Length: 335
Image (cartoon, rainbow, N blue to C red; front, side, top):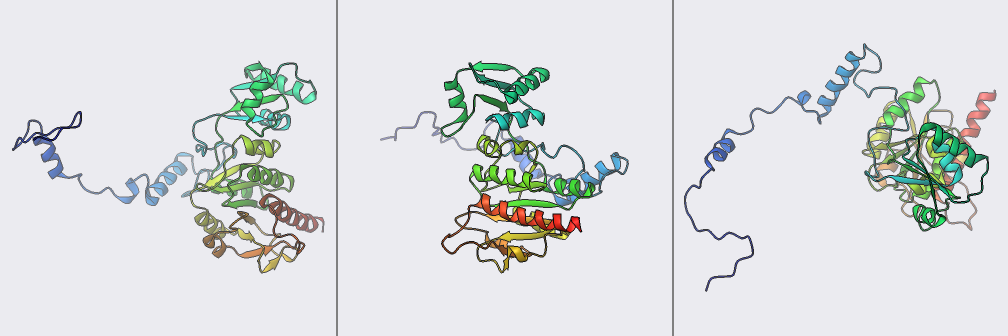
């Protein structure tokens, strides 16, 4: 008895060649031709160097041959971690800072019968001047846009996904301005509220940017925007394909890598690298710094805390370390 066939299945027993297969067979025998040279493959490092050299030559010798083109807005780069969905920035400080920074926005939402203060008036003025549609909605609709634990304060701004800078671009821009680099890199921080808090602290203590790994990391979403209290509009966030590799590149260019860990061999008050180009690496609260990142740190630094406290929140630890570096630099600048 013949077995029943699945719908669309074929059970042909016909032998020999079938119509139309001869060309396919000839093509498979011909192969794909000679292997292109490394410099002609766009994805190969040699190909990237060739493309960079061509850009350098086309620009009339401006920038750095063999590297990434300098300049551009550090807040916006052609790469997005969050995908293609828009984000809703909520809260008066966050929305106002985003509007002041001219972050692209597609709509400004304001609650019906909202309490008007100077911030709301300025938001309306900027939105109107820039031609951003102003939508009056109910508070229930804003509650939905802000999410379960969001606080919108009667306003929201719809923005495209955050576009990340490249770490090398950030470093070059800081050096070109004649400033002493101070970055924070996050190793395994997956809570966007921690990211937002660290962005805010970086802005407060004179940092120049945040470095995120492409995988296993929080991104700049609505929660990070909210927690940053608008600082995400001023402090650039860069994305590294591989954090360990990027830290190695920074070290080659004279940047010292400082890892924060409770079991560090150097106490934060005794840190002697604060007056150098520095990237502070913060690990996750549960696992801390990863093994590969730890191996590439110039120093592992601990923050002295009471024995009754097991550890510090990642955002607080970053704030304390940034404060220490900023204090030392201010003291040296005053001498």
